[in-house]
Length: 428
Image (cartoon, rainbow, N blue to C red; front, side):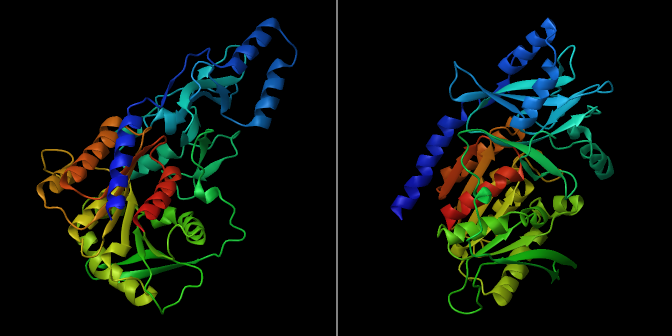
């Protein structure tokens, strides 16, 4: 047990040192060698220079990734868009650009090339989308759901980047593009799966007397699942409508590689924005539903464990907030918590100070719960990174068993799927 407790402290120290180094920044307009060559060729009137440039870009894909000789741990990442006479602007959204739609590309004079370059540390992996002729309205200024849907519909994948992932925001079938630099840890869900025993996914529902509604859920059962023998560990995971797209494959791989035991996962539905906001904001009724209705239902239907040390509650963003709250309210049910980019900035309406849940941890005795926390270094400092660090510090000060990490990426299911895999390996 002592060896297990020293690992979180080591990881915490490394994360503190590593997280202080800036991971990305906007580069000068003339930073890209490839674009500088194109500038010279266009200026000299070289025939076919622009056409040759786009042929080359189409073959290699975007964004352009070029070395920085004086900074070997980073690369120059240049986003591109092929415009036309009607192109007024092109916005980069998410990842290195953040969420406020302020990062506009530059126009290379005399060409149809729009571009923007960033210096990015080589362990980066992040999702992004592009928006030509964008409204330039910050998503932070939009409160209405219909307006938000319309705003997010402007965003689209990069047509010259073949790497795609499900979008974190917007329509269920929307896609983002993503960047993966040379030193990024391999994504487990990109691993070959042809020879891996496959589990099953069932979409079903449970009526909740506490919520007074039918709750849609997805249940993953591992290969060779049996309702006999030793009960299975249980993972309760929020945002099932998104996570069902990749978490079953992640679990198949982790189980086949013997990195976790055969495990059952129950994924709840928070696909309606106002339901998500209501249920995941430290909602006592919803949390009691998880512990008193959903987990017992899982035990009856899917032969899952009654031991809290083998039950994990997991979520991202507001789901990260909700998972910590569930562990603190029901430690007799949830002995393990995964929080990815937890929205610890949250406070109840009428409460004066932000980070309400962190203050609850500080004021309460230590409970028999273990934690895996992670946040992305491309996320907002004030809203995400700093509150996650304060939650980490508060949990550590209370003596909780804790693993905390900061990854070089954004507020995205692209990174959270990896976080679920890493959290389960640590906790199970």
